[in-house]
Length: 113
Length: 293
Image 1 (cartoon, rainbow over the protein chains, first blue to last red):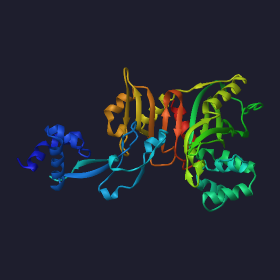
Image 2: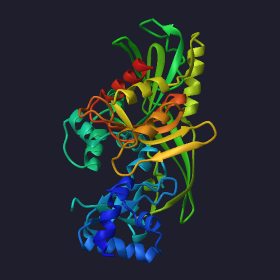
Image 3: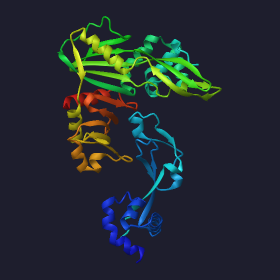
Image 4: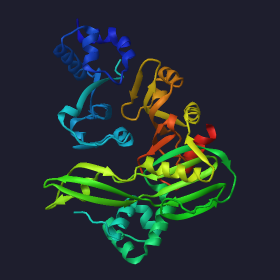
């Protein structure tokens, strides 16, 4: 079956997740695929412009772990970031250098019909 | 090794304020280092203390709201034996306000090489007594004490620090002082006031830890999302529960209230970790919480 066919059939159910926050694990569990296949599917969907890829910066504080900010391109990611929550909740560390471990990729469904 | 001369304490006091507020008050321009040096050289400690108390509503601070019994109806209070360095007291707009500057000491151990030192700070405290409530506003002191310790230009690591006068100590002293004047304070539960502001869409939750019957749940929102807007069903359930700790975002596009603040509703504690844009935001916030409570 062609990729566009799969996407079309499942788009409605996928959108129930949150069309602006689709993680590889959402796709993996939905289609019951191995992780690498699900990742490949997402990347193919980006190439065919069904998905838009985003880069989320995750707060490294274990008690927080929230997505602080997201970017469209890797080149836009700054070297340093502050977690507003951790600052206001008076946690000891709230400013961090961004490493690849802090970056979490996710996808957004585009408006393409 | 950090020293605790009068000039050191005054510099540390000025560091607690937004630089713009200092520049406007003293009508001076330049970097913080330059302006603090010239202010300390050109003005008496009294003038700097006056600046500190008049502008304490701009600082990052912890706000504690208490119930007061009996109701305070007088326009003055006998401040003899007040436990801390008194700077100002006045009856303004139906409130009796006391500004004081307790001296707080941190005993610090830093490495390498091993060093022990004490660092002292003047802590701006504003006490507002109004009808049935006492509001105690305490400026947050520098958390990162390592900035005062360096070796050959390299910042040292603070391995231990002990604060001599905690906020709880100050509250206990204040409670004892008021008790001697036949007044009693107790922690004010502000759930009702906070939930009314949430219902009215004045504020929304960006983080919330709430108590369910048999568990404690936490919601930490990504980016700038808020709970009521994003998860209205979950919000309705949260509104029935005790809020252990929450980070609240002011939703109205003006500068009437603080943009963000954390609340421990059952104990009436508010933390405001960023500088304020104007001198009335904290007063407006506390008045609105109490007014809806």
